[in-house]
Amino acid sequence: MAHDGAEFLDRFRAEARLLAQLNHPNVVRVLDFEDDPTRPYVVMEFVEGLSIHELLAQTGRIWWNRAVALLLQAVDGLEAAGKLGIVHRDVKPANILVTRDGTAKVVDLGLAVRIDPEHGPASDLSRSRVDGTVAYMCPERARNPAAVDLRADIYSLGITLFQMVTGRLPFTGTNAFEVIAAHACDPLPTAHEIATDVPPDISALVSRMAAKRPEDRFQSYNDVRAALLAIQKVVS
Image 1 (spheres, rainbow, N blue to C red):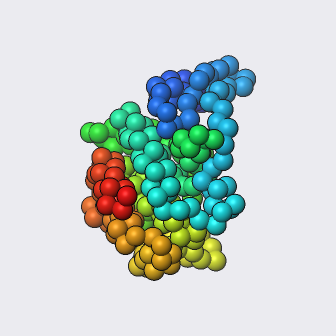
Image 2: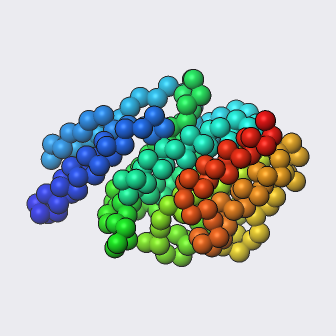
């Protein structure tokens, strides 16, 4: 048990230091940490504002051009994490905060994993038994939780964008198994057919982000950013 406790504290120190390196305006920062064996904790940046989940609860859906602007900022934050080898693994509206001045900040890296480019996942940044939120989970993660890279987060961002602009989730069910099966097998609904003010280009973007197979999605955050900026330019 003592050995396990020492190992946990070693991981805690290493992971807190890694997360503290994420000094980016679109990520909620780790400001400090205390690795006292009796009560280790981290000190996080305080964000005054609401999550996208809370905004959706208030407004029903988010006007598409604002949704694109918020998603661009989330992409910037996740890309910064990716440069440290971090994949979030639980991207969803509840984990994107919006400050009073409209800044989007990615939060809650409790399920994140650090990826070694040569050897795959290096370590969980959490040992929680919870493995993400099935409403936003890509098919490959449901089949194999170890099969994760940035394309898993891109998938979850696509589902998040769909919900932002339509006010509903694309896949639902009476239990987690049904939702997972729908993500794996059911065709993605068309966003602009649900919300007619949404440009078809956004439907196409969501379809690419939330493709069933990772190789059919955008392969980098830079590609996602370019597609979002193109939509802004075309319809502005």
